[in-house]
Image (cartoon, rainbow, N blue to C red; front, side, top):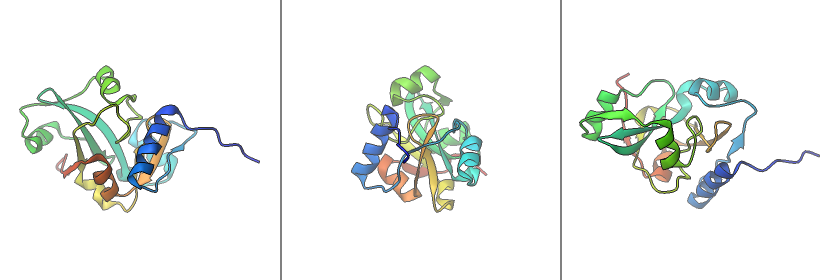
Length: 162
């Protein structure tokens, strides 16, 4: 008989948000870190592009959560044009934790203390199932592109010119 250990508190909050939104994906804890898209893809045996990386940027000083495909890097100049911002920079780790309540490498698209403006990389639509962090660097959950857009209230945009 296997006893399942409870999810970390941050991941429990994420699961509650998924349940409330009617998204069937379950947060699961993996034995190895999923801090990078490559780590997550390896652990899940999926394409790196199916990993929805959660990155916090500052667009003209305002936080924007970018859900990007692991197959490319966000082009900040391109993103600034898409957002109508003068400048876009990565948020420092301390600010990421303050705004999301989660650590870099485990930031989930949901479960933050307050709503965060979110954009969703259109490249993620290429995958039937995508994987997002579940609030810690060791937790993930599956969902569809449509579910990701719906649960985050995100705006689909191109975040890189690939």
